[in-house]
Image (cartoon, rainbow, N blue to C red; front, side, top):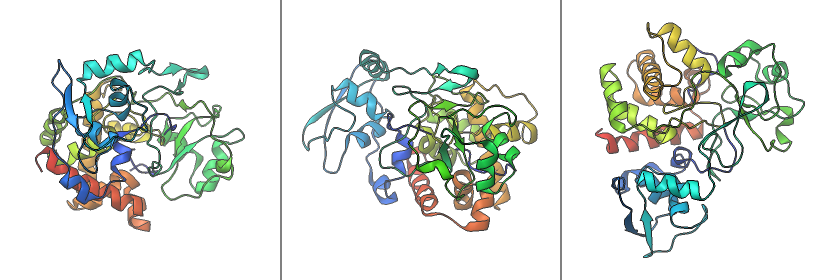
Length: 339
């Protein structure tokens, strides 16, 4: 198994559905109305109900806060008014609104072949006020891979392998990394985060595509994994968005780390996985989840915790508070997907 754990960075410019879900108590998620997405051709009017926010309205329709805000001519942090009307766009209308607002959904190429994800891109993304992705760290000027490994007390090759980095290559400032869950903050963590973030060039690749819950549940059922569990994790992690990159360098629908992708490829499947394929991102995440269920004797809560925190860390250190919230929210979300 990978040493670092979690399949699973981010600037503050994009509000991620999945990260905000970690802030919601399970009881709220259970009681949330199960709206459906807007029809393909036209926006749908929605009257703001008590307790709703722009984010909850967007999340219920499988849209980002940014999309709904752009379509309605609102800032992302706008406070919606009880009884007011918000238009819920179709995916096509939402994409057009984002384009008109100057929001790009493509990452650009940075020096050295890495992917730069500056303001206005889908990846990486996070939500203001939400817990940071577990182990997420953005490299500061002066950081070295060997120094970060020493702080985390793991071999340098372990961090390099998990993040898809060349241990002999340069470590660019702004690179988003996954550090071991619960490791101390690096000495330079108090320094300002670089304005431009860099996603290491490694499989799986974030691609501008969305999938449906059915895509996830069918793959899960084919591999003996509870379909509603896999779908709930996929929604929690990415909102079914394969373009998503977390601030811990996880990618795609199931938020698969490069090291986890390589381990699944070499250990759990005999066919070559396509790093650009959303379907294969689901495939890798489902196989990994199935392995966690096997290793925990079918204990779903432990498997969910292992998916987020890393099973080795869970066993050695117990569940962190963020992990407990993650587990509760995933279990609450399952009702949306037939479980």
